[in-house]
Structures are given as C-alpha cells and as structure tokens.
Length: 161
Image (tube, rainbow, N blue to C red):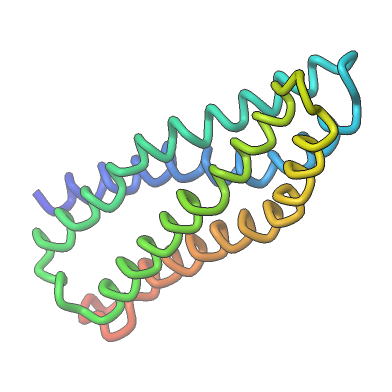
C-alpha cells in the first residue's frame, strides 16, 4: 500500500505543483507586457488570465499532494521523522505564500486589466503589487525545491539510500 500511495503522491506532485510553479513564474513577465501594451494587446491579457486560472485551479487540485503525502508517511511509518515534519512545515509555508501573496497579487493585476473606470489608479496599484510577484513566485518555487530535496535525502533515513 505504501508504494501505491507514494506513486500517487509523486504523480500528484508532478501534475499539480509543476503547473503552478511554471504559471506563477511566467505571470509577472506576461503581466508587465499586458499592462504596458494598452487596449490593443488582447493576446497578452488573455495569457495573463490563463496563467492566473492555471494557478488557481492547480492550487486547489494541489491539495491532494499533502494529503497523499501524509497518507504515504503514515503507511511508511515515518510520520514523526524530523525531515518529514520540516517538509510539512515548508509545504504549509509555500501554500501560505501562494494563497496570501502570489494569487492575490495576480488577481490585482487581472482587476487592473479589467478596470474601465479610473484605469490609471488601478494600473498603478497593480504595478506596485506586480513588483513583488517575481520575488514571491521565487520564494514559492524555492520552498518546493527544498521540500523535494528533503524528500530525496531524508536525513536520518534507515533505508540505506
């Protein structure tokens, strides 16, 4: 059962976290182009909306990753190991960064693109939030990279690997 759960967990990581990581990384560059392009650049705006939709959808589906991970850890009897607890904490921090900073920053950009009245003020607010998005996207991706390393190295593991 542990191998089956581990396989599902890894599949969920690849299919859920990967798209979110790519979408949040691409969003700031595409958003700058869409905000600067003006009304004639609908293609850039569509790209920004799509990347935001991908981030939202896969963040929701990505809830399967920690759930399957905890199930796998319980089946492997490693739930109390320090490396796993650190991974759980880092995963929670990554989720917090995504939910509190990345997705709201993206939504502010989308709102600025959709605003018709008071366009200059909306764009100024979105541009200010957009300055933080590359950093928060990088922090989100770095946290997942650290979790991945912890999962592979597993300090104190008795598996001999």
